[in-house]
Length: 376
Image (cartoon, rainbow, N blue to C red; front, side):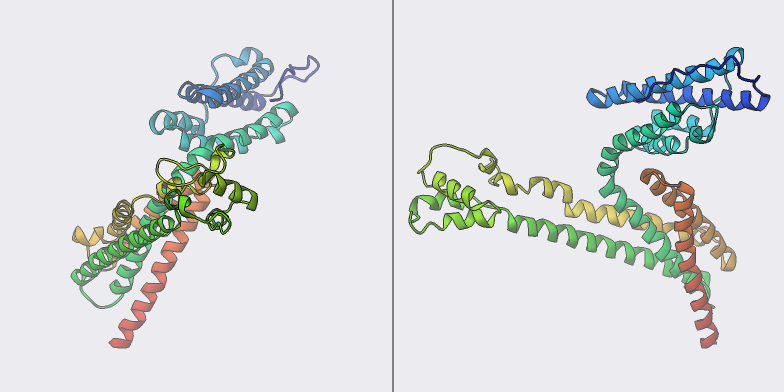
C-alpha cells in the first residue's frame, strides 16, 4: 500500500473553520475504520488476518495526516459518521459478510480523490482498499449465494404474487372475507408449488449427477478383458482423460504397470475417480427435502404479509392500502440487503424491488376493477 508521509506545509494559509470541521470528520472516520479492521482481524487467522491488519495500519497513517493538518484541533475528534458507526455495530452483531460489503462501499465512496487537502497517496490507498475488501468479501458472498438467493427470491415471490392476487380480487365487489380466503389459498398454493418445484429440481440434479458418477466395475472386469481389444481405455476416454492417460490407466488396472503415475486418477474410497469426483457437486446442490421446506417457508413468509390487514380485521380499500404499505417496506428491506451484499446502492436496489412489486399489484388492481365493471 502507498505510504502517506506528507505533513502540513508551513507556508500553507491558515485553515478555515469549514476545513477544520471537514478534517475532524475525516479523522473520526479514519479512527472508526481502523478499529473496525482491527476488530475483524482479531477474529481471523492466517492471510486474512494479515490483510486486515494491513488495512488497519493504512488507516492509522491516514489519521496521522489529518492530525498533522489539524494540530491542536485534532484533540477530542467528533463522533464518526453514522455509516462508520453502523459498520462497527454490525461487525459485533452479525459477523463479517455484511460488514465487509458495507466497508467495500464506504471505501469506494471515499472523498479523498476530489479533496485537495488529501494527498494523492491517500486517494490511491482508498482505491486499493476497495479492491482488497472486495476480495475479502468474495468468499463470504459465495457461501451465502445459494441459500441467500433462495431466501430472497422465495420471499419476494410470495410478497409480489400474493399482493397482486389480493389487489386483483380486492378491486372487485367481493367481501373482505373472500379476499382473505383467496389470499390464504394463494399463500398455500404458491408455497406448495415452490416447494414441489424445488424438490423436483434438486432431486433431478442429484439423480443426473449420480448417473454420471463412475463406479468400480473397472476393477472387477479388468482381469477378464482382452489385452489386444482393451475396451477399458474407452471408459477412461469417456471420463475425459487424454489417450495417453487412458492407455496408461488401463494398463495399471490390468496389472501391466505397477506404478500409479497419475494419482489424480486413482479411485477414492467413495468409488469415484479423481477427475470426475461429484461429491462436492452433490454437497453444493443440497438436500431435496431441505430445499423444498426452505422454499415453502420463504414463500409463505412473504405471502403472509399482504393478508395481515385482513387477518387483523381491516376491510375494503383501507386493508388494501395497508397491505401495499407493509409489502413496500418488506420489498425495500429485501432489495436493500441484496444491494448491500452485492456492493451496490441499497437504496437503488430497494427502489427497484419496490417498483416491480407495486407495479405488478397496480396492474392486477386495474384488471380486477375492469372485470368488476364488466360483470356488473
